[in-house]
Amino acid sequence: MLNIVLFGPPGAGKGTQAEKLISKYNLVHLSTGDIFRSNIKGKTELGNLAKSYMDKGELVPDSVTIQMLEKEVSANPTAKGFIFDGFPRTTHQAKALDEFLDSISTEVSLMLALEVPKEELIERLLLRGKESQRADDQDKSIIENRIRVYLEQTAIVASYYQSQGKHKSVNGQGSIGEITERLFQVID
Ligand code: ADP
Image (cartoon, rainbow, N blue to C red; front, side):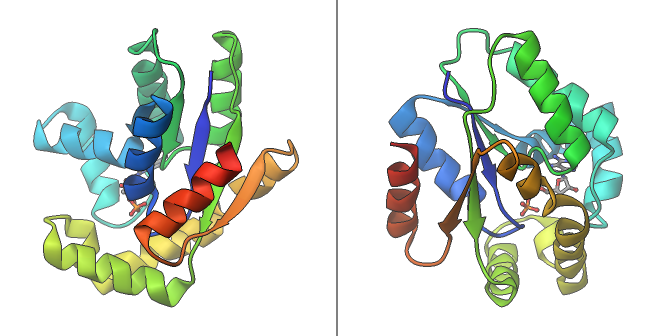
């Protein structure tokens, strides 16, 4: 299996690039943000809970997020591999993912980290807020909180994969096509 963790701060382009990778490598795309948003839309219990955190730009609790992710992986038993987008966001989530994948006799193959400077992230997210309905992209203080949460809780996950020799840094600035090519090169 080819299991890729697509990593980077909010606005780094994970969702956009994940779409390119799934079609080339025939993988299943699991975006925890998208799954939470579809639960919010469907007004499920999980959606209501997630919304209370997402509206503030905070992380949804690990226990809930991990359980949801494991359920999604299990729902795709014939997958050739997965792109994990927006997960893991804490070291606890990264360890849980390793243990879970081990229990189904597979592992994370590679972690691709998209690098984009903070000023560009804020610009991109505000632009996305204008074009989409995402509430968490409309407000500069929520965006700044998400970046702060990223720096405080998520950035450290890179060293978890570094210590396993699985971390690859990729320049996330340039055209969408240029960035896709860089990712293809690292994977191939
Ligand atoms: P972005 O990368 O632009 O922040 P996402 O769609 O990945 O967008 O995430 C939106 C929100 O969903 C996050 O701010 C957080 O509240 C919640 N979320 C997504 N993934 C996770 C996760 N792995 N753990 C905890 N919360 C998460």
